[in-house]
Each structure stands twice: as C-alpha cells, then as structure tokens.
Length: 93
Image 1 (cartoon, rainbow, N blue to C red):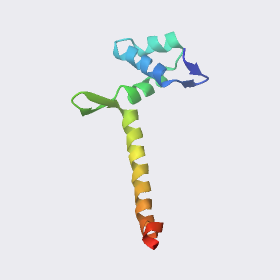
Image 2 (tube, rainbow, N blue to C red):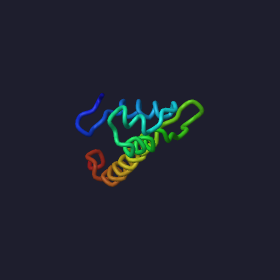
Image 3 (spheres, helix red, strand yellow):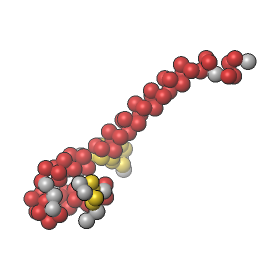
Image 4 (tube, rainbow, N blue to C red):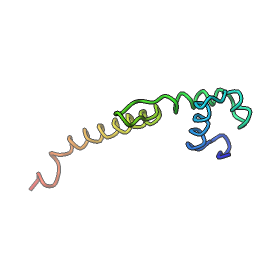
C-alpha cells in the first residue's frame, strides 16, 4: 500500500477509483484496503468527475480546480506587473 500515515499518493487514490469504476463496491474496497468508505467517496468526487477539454482529452475535477487556481495567480501577477511597468528602468532613461 502506498501511504504514509493518513496520506495516500495520487497514484494510489486513482487506482482505488479505477477499481471502483470497474464495478468493485465501495464497501469491498474499504475493507480490502483498510480505508473509510467516506474517503473513497471523497476521492470519487475528485477523480471520477471529469471535464472534457477537447475530443480526445479529459481532466479530473481536481486538475481543473488546480488550473483555475493557477490562472487566478497568473492574472494577479500580470496585473501587478502592468502597474510596475511605468517605473521600469527602461522608461526612466
């Protein structure tokens, strides 16, 4: 099993959800891997829900949320850089 305390690797979580999606009941997975059923349902929400990006590509809800967060951070950085532009050394010469 790939875990450290209560932390499980992304790969382990995806393997559990793949088993679930292949038809294995949550109760059985929880018993077999020593997990709490609620944990599997939480992972299901994160990894089984997918968003279609284009015809051949889908991403998980977790990946989508990470991309949204990164986009907000980059937008904030961009706004800060726009405000600093008039004070750049090139404009002071």
